Length: 92
Ligand SMILES: [Zn+2]
Image (cartoon, helix red, strand yellow):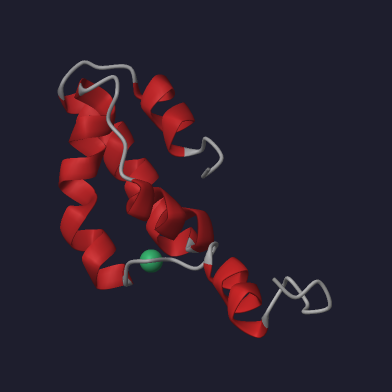
């Protein structure tokens, strides 16, 4: 232990900065979107952190996913509101 060594190294700082970066590409996001929308609507505990991180930082995918959730909800007579709420919960 060296108390004079700065705790926040450059590498740690970079990791912090990466936390809010999407983990998925938009293509990956689109691939998983159908499944995630259905799960949000039908499985109360459903979560996909990588997807939520991506849509939190990517307005285009967020908009796409929201309309998909609403569409699937409509087709299945489900309520889209709780799923959309869950989607926008802060990413831990
Ligand atoms: Zn995207």
